[in-house]
Every structure is written in structure tokens, then in C-alpha cells.
Image (tube, rainbow, N blue to C red; front, top):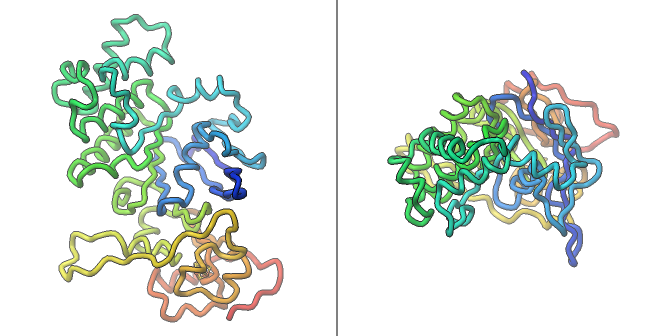
Length: 354
Ligand code: SF4
């Protein structure tokens, strides 16, 4: 399948007085045309920093490190000037944020805000054409009384309506890539479902790719073609929604899944929390970043980074439990028969697992 975006070895650090905060550490992934990729993980795992770097929005003291590559339709973006990023943003790639009330301009009517984005990228359009296109986009988001809505200020709309307006602002230029950063977190569940359905509908109509960022795996269960689980600035597991929900292999993915409420849970099981905190990213652990919180940690986990194991072309995991010598007894996740499918790269030096 054709790739729209390829991210290779992306590393982003913030250079603070306390030291170098290594927010994103050498991640690689791609986004296919017309498909949805979900970046999942708890706050501080680097997913929003990743999204910002794809839009050229990393500001000082942050820096995208020189070894990083962001390739969009064959073009390398990391060397872009501010002017080139400005053309790219909005036209090729747009972003929807969590809190529409903060992101929308409170002093500007909705219609003007949608039109503004279009004007910046389609200078040849007349005033009337801009109005009509903005109105058409607002209609497509399902806002009731779109003409009336064009003349309202953001504070006059409900949270769900504001989120629809923000999607209209992002989509009015028909970008190839939509990045949605926690787009439903501030909404109640029924509105959440409507916003997700709207993004899927627009994707089908307009054919764009979506990167959705969330801490809640439940939000992307039906929507994502690929799920990338991040922890402490690294990718720990990636796979299709089926891989992640039914055959997950990483203790962190399993822990995240245990914290998603299930509608069919008649026993009202108490939701799991993950004890402890993410590591200090100025001094990230030498071995596996999850080792201080992982109930299955072995000695080697503290000493050496786990290799990436490819279970299938689409499903991979970075965990020492994938090593054939590891004792998986008592490990409650994933299918043990999947182990027979595993191809594991040969370790570069002898390892001991204890
Ligand atoms: Fe746990 Fe070790 Fe796997 Fe890390 S590598 S997730 S510490 S078992």
C-alpha cells in the first residue's frame, strides 16, 4: 500500500537548564494513504511531541535531532524553512486539538475562522467562493443550521459543535493528512462517538490519512488501521487493531488494555492502574524503559534494550519476553502459540536472562 508519510529514526529533545529531556527517542513508522494510524500511550510518552514535529511546530528549547527523517510523499521535511512549513501546514497537513475553546479564536466568528485558513492557501478564490466553500465544509461536519453557525462565536456553541467547527477549519483545504491530538478527550462519550464517526465519514469522502493521538485505546478500537503503542519516547509495540486488542505481547500494552472499561463487563471488574511513573527523560533507563513498572522484568531488562521482534509484517514488539529463552509462565497476555510465528533477530552478543 502506498505510503503518504515515512518517519525514520525521529528523535526530539528539549534542552533545559536541568539537562536534555529526550522526549522522542529514535522512532520509525509510516502512514499509508487513506488509512488511520493511532499513536497511543499515557501522558508524557512523546506522542504529542511526535505530532508537533510532523507539523514543524517544535519550538525552542526543543529540537528535532539531525539524524531524524520525515518524508512526505517522497520529500524530506526536516530541512524545511519556516516559510515552507507554513505552506505545508494547512494545505497538506492539518491538526485538530483537544480543546476547541482554547484553539479557536474567541473574538472571531466561526465562518471567518474557517475562511481564514482557506484564504491563506487559496489566494485565487473570490470572497464569495471562500464563503461558499467554508459553508459547504461546515455542512459536511453535520452542524445544525450551518448558515447561522457561521455567524456565531465559539463560546456560543456546545463542546461537540466547537469540535466540529475545528474539524471544518482543518479540513476546508482538503489536506492529505489530518493529525487529531486527543480530539475527543474533553467530550462526553456520546459526543466522542459522533466526532469519531465524523472523522471516519470525512476520511471516506475525502480520502485523507489520519494520525489520531490518544491515551485511550477504547477510542481507536474501531477506527485505527494501525496502532502504535509508545512509552517513554519509544515505540514498544505496533500492529493492527486486531493484533493489539487480541494478541498483544508487551506488558505495557496489556496494562493499557486493562484500564479500558468494557461495556460487556457484567462482573464490574475494577479497572487496572499502572503503578509508578514514567522515567525521568533526562536520564532514561539504559535497558527497557518500562522495567521499573513491569511485573515481569528480568535482570537483562535493566541492562540492555530489548530487540524488536517481528511477529508478522504488521505486528512487532520490543520486549525481552519475546526471546525464546525467557520464561513466559504466568504471563497473562497474548497467545502463547504466537511464539512459534516469531522471527527474532540474533542478539549481537551473548545475553543471560535471569
Ligand atoms: Fe517488562 Fe522486560 Fe519486557 Fe521491558 S523488556 S516490558 S521490563 S519484560
